Length: 166
Figure (tube, rainbow, N blue to C red):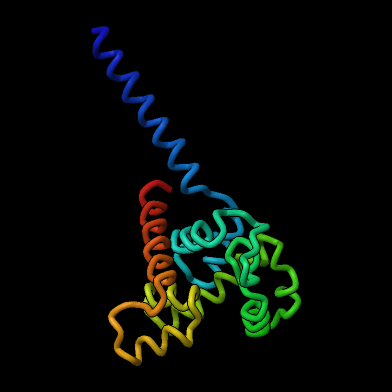
């Protein structure tokens, strides 16, 4: 009887530790903003969670060396173009606001998903739609940048984990 109780306690502790590690490596946050934007644009919530995790690690103050800003790491030019398509140019001035950043990022991702497969849309989100269109036209079997190949793998892995554990 004592052995069975000890086994249950050890199992429960292992599950709890796994959950803690998982929540650290695959955080959640900004759920209201993600749900609202994904509902508005018809984009998979777990895909967006994977993009945010891969792009910024859920850090709303993240800024890349190239100048990408916020949770979804939007370049200011991309944000301005997307905001103009939404008819809300002012939105692009608030990239440090999580709600604005997520809305613009999801809108841009939806645009790319309308042009490409999910995998190619992610590559375009990372490397630019022109590069992806060229790689497809050239008949390449893989993306031209190693960073983009790794990025797509990381986002799709995160999406899968969010689907299982969310």
